[in-house]
Amino acid sequence: MSDAPKHPLLQVEGLCKSFDGNEVLAGVDFTVPRGTLVSVLGRSGAGKSVFLKCLAGVEQPDGGSITFDGQPLRPGTKAARADFRRRCSFLFQSNALFDSLTALENVALPLEQTTRLSDAEVRERSLEALRQLELDTCCDRYPSQLSGGMQKRLALARAIVTRPELVLFDEPTAGLDPLRRNAVFTMIVKYQRQFGFTAVVVTHDVPEALIASDHVALLESGRICFTGTSAEFSASDVSVVRHFRDSTAALGSSLAALRSGEARQPDPS
Image (cartoon, rainbow, N blue to C red; front, side):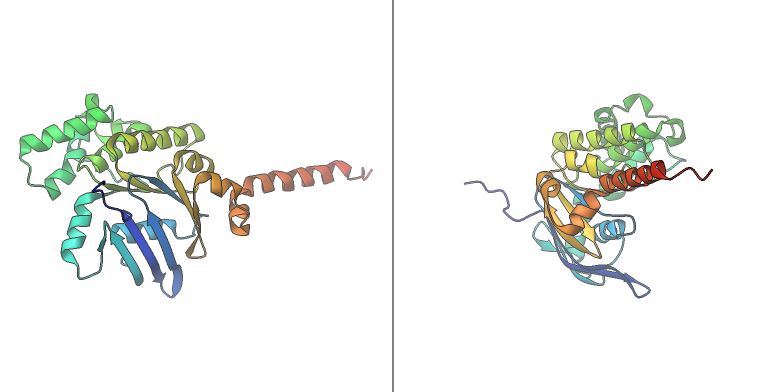
């Protein structure tokens, strides 16, 4: 019989968060099985990034519970929170690279801040992370000297250099064209499989997320209104899922109707 833990890596129950009386999260329930890639979908302004920041500890929720690897992350549980910070990484939407540091220095920073490794060990671990992300020839370059795709890989190298069990991705494809969105999702899936971490990806890029994810969740009106596989999401007849999923087709139908109506307009002359 396997000794592997049976509980999910991350469990969220009734998570609430408000800003100036505006309720953003209204009781979110969310489960992340160990070793999976889970995408959280939702329209702009639905609270996806706030939800991810609550998971990462960047924002303090007003209510509810977050459990990581069976340990509750409550305000007073310093040991559990320290353990969580050691085992979790956060990849920001903007990459959050330090312009004044080289690629190698950017990757080394989390190790310098969170471990007691020697300088030589930090350098070797950082170089290995850059090699794994195919950036070892760019060690001495600054972020401004790298392409957008290379910057994204550099941010991921920094996120995985501590060998985390959980990586949180905040809109990793925001502002990218379709080809680069595909490349980023391919990168996430490739390295999630290679290194075995669990991934939570917040995104509004539905087609790419459905292809890449093991499970998807839809955040709407402050709650998770759907969880399941990509196939279940694509087949769901729940109205809120349909409206979100089929919005592009609905736009096409609306525009086709408008064009058809314009074509039938009589000539005013």
